[in-house]
Amino acid sequence: MNKQKHKLKPRYIFFITATTLILIGYFVFLCTYCRNYTIKIMLNGTTNLSTVLVECSNDNTVKVVNMRQDNFNWMMNALEIDIESISYGDTDLTVFFDDIYNNSPDDNGQPDTGQITEHRTFATSFHVLPFGMIYCTAGDNFNGLWTIKLLSDALLIVLTITFALSFREKQKAGNFTYSMVALGGMVFFLTIIVINSLLDTFSSIDYSSVLNFENVLYSVSRINTTFVNVTLIPFLAFCLALSISNILLVRHEGFSIFNLLGVLLGISVIAGTILMCIFGNDLYMYSETEQILMIVINTSVSFAFCYLECLLISTTFCAIMSTRYKIKTPMDYIIILGCAIRGDGTPTPILRSRIDCAIDFDKEQYKKWNKHAKFVTSGGQGSDEVISEAECMKRYLMEQGVPEESILKEDKSVNTYQNFAFSKKVIEADADDLGKTGIAFSTTNYHVFRGYTLAQKIGMTVKGLSAKTKLYFFPNAFLREFIGLLVEQKIRHLFVIISGILFFVGLYIIVQY
Image (cartoon, rainbow, N blue to C red; front, side, top):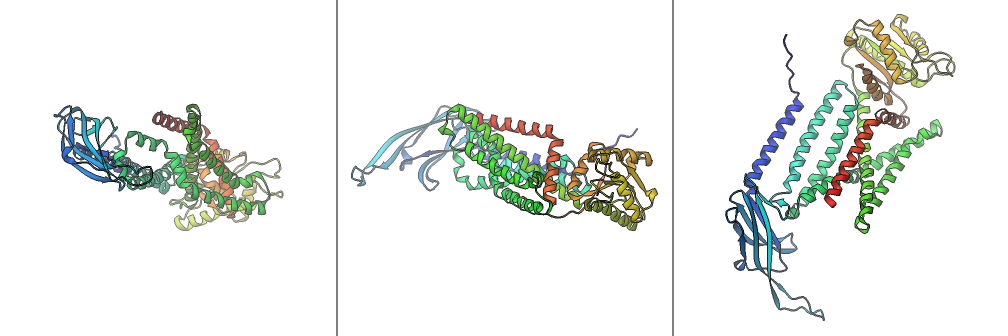
């Protein structure tokens, strides 16, 4: 029996190749550039290089190759000593030098032209790794430590591109799922973080000599707050636009709590921002216990804020893409998802738009592939409805010229999940092989993405058809669907949020204490 060979997808080949090249290149960099280390000693004035004495506890480990006096960051002078590794081992290094500077002004504010020569000593220690890199154990750094940020940025860029390629692959295949939302959220998050990190690295490159691993870990622990700060203004503008659409919605549809979800979202964002400001500043004014409590609150709010913001934005993009997806093959069945009908048993404008969307697709399909699909009308009868939604849709379809034998009824479902589950049984009873059957579903645009996720949940491969609705209605209706998506996967979302909070709180406390 021949075994099928599974080829690596291009995105995995790209990720493995790019990551390997970056890591090999960085190791070569460590073996060359980091064989040297520059000791910077701040001076109050100047020094005479001829009087500088450097003593090394192990002359076989490192050697001094150059000494110079330089201006540090255009503010003060510094004595710089370049050392180079010789062999693996540990060594202590002591520098003896004279610091020559002017006297401070006297009591009358007049400058004293006399000079003071201060005999100073500077001590530090080093560990030379087997491949020659010099690591300063006293300063917890090495020459070019700031390049770790560049390394992490390069790896994050590779990861972002890999996620983006996977996201694009799912979008082209019409595979609109929770994993697509997660990928989109990660692409958005990583893009903002990488851009901010690169700007920060290149703007603070003059301070590279004072960096250490504590600084690096601290920047990682504050990554969520950084993300929130960078995206705050655009996100507030997004919430403002939603609030304006809510005002239009209330004017047309009447007042209800569900018609004000955009306003509530804006209030939540403002409240979360205020909480982060209150619990994220001036920590050293409080006791150690209070500091830890404030860190926990700040990190919890910022991570939850960050996670939900990425999820909302990614879901928005996925939802828009799902409504614009063009079906590339003929369908055998079109499920029309039901909703409330009028008191006289006729379809409401929203339901009629879903039916018309299905009819229009079937006409286009017949022109392209000379094939008609069967319609599955899905929806039970509510307590205030004179007939079932399925029967209402069937009658409307027949009025539009669809033959009765091309219509299958599913009239037991009471929600979207049951629409798909019960329609699946109806199709299974009619089709020869469900696995080889093309199935589409027609629903209102804001509801398409959720339809994909529910169909996947019961093991159906479907393609969505998007019926339009009034523009002012879409944002708020979509927020309701987004909340529905959160509720459906509440355990998963809670697990991610709690895990993220514990990780970042733990990292921050380790760095601080």
